[in-house]
Length: 463
Ligand SMILES: [Zn+2]
Image (cartoon, rainbow, N blue to C red; front, side, top):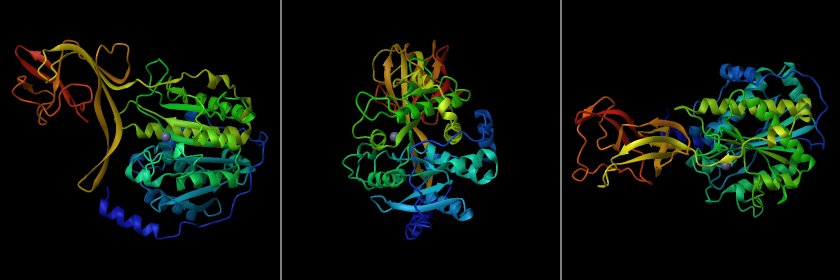
């Protein structure tokens, strides 16, 4: 962990350096994919194993700052200058560099950009793992086929000002992904200029989605949602959209062994202002990859690994031509995103709400989003959680459910309480807890088991 002071100094130092180390513009993309070549494809399980052994990404993507990305890009390029090319393609509202790194000599150009929304960092890490993979294995057939067929362009952090604040929007307060037509954000203009210069036939728009997202009505989290982005209201199926549907089908089949039932399809409604939709219209057919929830206290390694497997598999399928054999029905048949998954569901509790009302039976639905806490010059990720719903929630699903049948849920009245303590339940009319159990309140409660007039603390819920 580094101090905030050190980070600030490092950032200023890096911003003073010109980021451009190479300005050789790549050639314009041809209209058709490469012919099938070397079938040196790795299975999803093999790619996952490789990621476990060889990944270089930071342990927690939300803590990655612009200075880290800038330094890492420079390090990668300077270590292997015959493989990687780097240029600064512009500056954010607050003057942070936006960088374009590319590699490969193939005629078919692919553009990938991440962190258009500053608080959506998972794919940024996966992109650095791909660079490491290419560097390490550049002489093996599976990589030489990639490098010979494709030229791969990445913009790992399109919204560095938003990333610095861990917020969706840029420093103007604009959602860059609704600025494709008006182009009032420098970040949006930079992306459009790069697309226009390269004119790649395919692009990957890399995001994170809300942790409430489930894969249809299955109750499973939508850990990865895919979209072949439309370019008009009727969602016309052009050759480019057929290609992106096939790429999505390839990714689905790669990920389902690693995340069974947790791959979904993003809503394909046309959004006239969005970048994916307009890039597709301008000639770069876009695959949207949205990374969603994973039910673990430390979800990041699982999520980065899935992104790595998805992108490596998709690039390989494009390079070898394998994508042309994909069945696009595998994409069409994916469950559609739903948005009512809870982070935590306490089921069938006797609720002592702390508001003065008599105890009642209810389920308690908690939602959460990721946040960054800065304390004592250290930055940490945490979940910001609140009670979203209360009542009969038996038709709902959650990342984690607690069966509280026969148990009491009460506000956390004392932060010093521990699991296993045996306590008397306070009279909440005389002693207010910091937060009551009600929709909109922070999720701070205890689950208690009555033991002949006293209560044993079974679980403390606090984030
Ligand atoms: Zn997003």
